[in-house]
Structures are given as C-alpha cells and as structure tokens.
Amino acid sequence: MLKQLFARKTDFSEDADSSHGPSLRRTLGPWGITALGIGAVIGTGIFVVTGQAAADHAGPAVLISFILAAICSGFTALCYAEFATLIPISGSSYSYAYATLGELVAWFIGWNMVLEYGISASAVAASWTGYFTSLLDHIGIDLPVSLTDAPLAYTNGALVATGHLINLPAVLIVLALTWLCYVGIRESAGLNLFMVLLKVGLIIVVVVAGYRYVNPANWHPFIPAPQGNDKYGWDGILRGAAMVFFAYIGFEATSTAAQECKNPQRDLPFGTLVSLVICTVLYLAMAAVLTGLIPYTQLGTDEPVVTAIRAHPELGWLRLIVEIGAMIGLSSVILVMIIAQPRIFMIMARDGLLPKVFNRIHPRHRTPHLNTVITGVGIAALAAVFPLDLLANLTSMGTLIAFVAVCAGVLILRHTSPELPRTFRVPWAHFVCIAGVLSCLALLATMDWFNWALMAAWTLVGFAIYFTYGVRHSHLRLANQPNKP
Image 1 (spheres, one colour):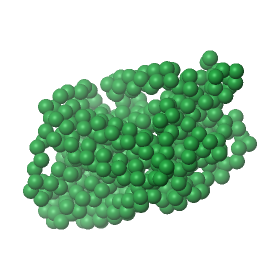
Image 2: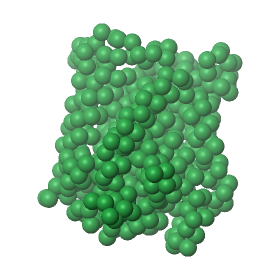
Image 3: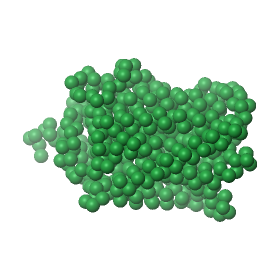
Image 4: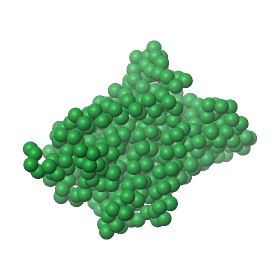
C-alpha cells in the first residue's frame, strides 16, 4: 500500500496525455508565455502589498525584502525551467512532483496549487476593489461600504466580523474574466498581452514622474528600529520578504500553459526566467519611489500608489492614470490565474485523481470550460467574503510548499533519470536546488499559527478527497493492478 502511494508517473508524453481527452489549441510563442508570466506577477504585489509590507514590517528596507523574495523565486524559476523541458504538459509542479516524489506528494502539491492560483486570484480581486472605489470617488460616485468591503477581517491573528455584506466589485470582475477564459485561450492571451503592455508602461511613468519628488529623508532610517512582533528590524525584513513573496507568485503559471505552447521546450524556460527578471526590476523601482514619496508609515492603505501621489499635488494628473492602470493590471493577474487553475484540475482528472467532469474540453472553444466555471465561481465566492491579507498569506504558504517540491524534484530526477534529454539544465544544480528548498522553508517559518492552522485544515480536506476518490480511480494505480477492474 505504502509503495503504491509513492508510485511515480513516468510517461508524460503528449500522446499519453491526449489519450484521456481532446488536446488544447497551441497558439502561444515565447513572448506570449512571457506576457502570461508578467501578467500573473505584476498586480497586487506592486499596487498593494508593497505599501503594506513597508508600513507594517520592513520600512524602506522593503527593497531588501523584495530582493530576498526574488532570490528565493530565482532559485525556483531555474528549477521550473529545467522541468518544463522534461515534462512539457500543463500540470506544472503537480506533474513535476508526480515524476519525482510519487502520487501522494503530487496530490498534496496539486491541492496546494488550488491555494496558489484560486485563492491568489481572490486576493487580487479583493485588492482590485480598492482602486475601483478610489476611481469612483475621483469622479464623484460613492458606493456603500457594505457592498465594497468583505464581511470578515483578519485582525490580531483571528477572523472577526466587519458588519459589511459583500465585496461586490471583486465578484463582478472575476465573473467577467471567467467568461473571457471560457471563450478561449487566444482571446484571453491577446487581452492579457494588451493589459501587460499597459501596466508596465504605467509603472514606468509612475517611477519616472515620481522620482523627481522623492525625498531621500524618507529613506532614513533605512532599517527602522525593531518594535517586536516582526515589526521593523531584520525580523520585519524577513516577515516582509514572506509577505512580498506573494508579489512573485505567478511566474511559474507559464508552465500551466505548456500544452498551448508552440514549442514548450524552448518557450517555457524563456518565458519563466525573462518574466521574473522584468518583474523584479519593476518591483524594486516602484518600491524605492513609493517609500521616497511619503513616510513609509503612511503606505499601509488599500491603494498605496494613490496615497503616495495624493501627497504631491504636482502629481495629481497621475492619479486617474494610476487608478485605471492598476485596475487593468490587477485584472490581468486574475485572468492568468483563471487560465491556470482549470488546467491543473484537467491534468489531475486525466490522471484519475479527480472525477472525469474536470477533464471536459469545450468542442468549439477548446478550453476546459466546466473547470473554468467552477474556478471562477469559487474565486468570486472567496473574494466576496474574505480579506486580502488572509488570502495572500494562505496563497504564499501553498506556493512555497510547491516550490520546495520542485527544487527537490530536480535533484531527485538528476539521480533517478540522468539519461533524460534536458534542453535546459539548472547551473550548479546541487547549490541552487538546496538553496531553493532552504529559502522557501525560511519564508514558511515566518508565518503565524493561524495561517498554519488553516493550512492544516486545508490539507486534511485534500487528503480526505484523495483517499475517498483518488486512490480508487488513479490510472497509475489501476495500471499497476491489471487483475483488478
């Protein structure tokens, strides 16, 4: 029994995968994949989390937090790039874990990827509302707070009721983007490319225009004196790194589109690494400008970029641009996550670990349409009820666990299957992979007990599904037991 739980899947060829259902449409080239990566990464991290991490944890040293998170992500990105050339299908770290660590671990990783893609989209949708209401306020329209705030808040490590009804704008943007993903990858990718170009241009405009009004005195002290509870000092920088790590989540979403790449062995490593480099440069530039425009203690708002601009009347012309650009930028993150999550469900269903309904492909649009609807409705429901900070922390935890498996998996596969052709190889693999595992574990160690309790509950639910359904329907398990029906 134990051996079967850790059985590894070895055939990841496209023929083997497509035998379980229709194939997806191959329309994405290297820059399309890069745009997906940037679309998934640049969003809440740069428009919301940067300010909150600076105000609550790191101060101006949030730049160091971003660098630490980028190093951790860089180690992992190299590992993803090697796996992408070995296993060019849409399962991302779920498929990579299946090849190296076995079925039970693969399920655990796949279940955590629901946190990474599904819940992160909910977190981004929750932050989208902040800029949407700021835009309405700018043009003289006020929505009732009861319809724009979540009914729950995360305060002092616990959930408390706010008295509000629903985050309605978040629900509406998620459902609108879900419809677009239902229609097709070509339409979704095209809109994403437009939104990526727009938000990158916006960030450059804000950085260039805002730099003239930076007051270097706001950067001193660069590392504020510690006040306990991960507030400032080096403890605050590390806690800030775990928080802004949420900003990097999504670069590996490129691997979920492997079966829609024209040349996955070439395009996936390129898109994964290039998108991460571009996003890191933009994050550091924006963080430096924001903390230079106003004192870092004033950045802990739902729309810190607008907050910083309001402090300088000379930059008033930027506010409307930022509000519209931020909404578009955040929308692209939600869009990519809604693209990614249904494809994870599809691969897991093709392995027999989820019911066959998750494997259905629309005959005309060639998209996993039912998965897309399920994902969109679930994301909308979470965004309607839960606050941004709780969703962001859970997302980071699920992603860090998946990253640990990917970094370890590269080393394992180097020893178990050294003969496999690798068009991209992780340089200094032993150092990079071990450093990736340790850096992810270090960030996980900064999470508080409440997040760990939620993660434990999530894991128990996942294992209950696996042992009641997945174990009995696993195609790999059935193949290894030919005498059983």
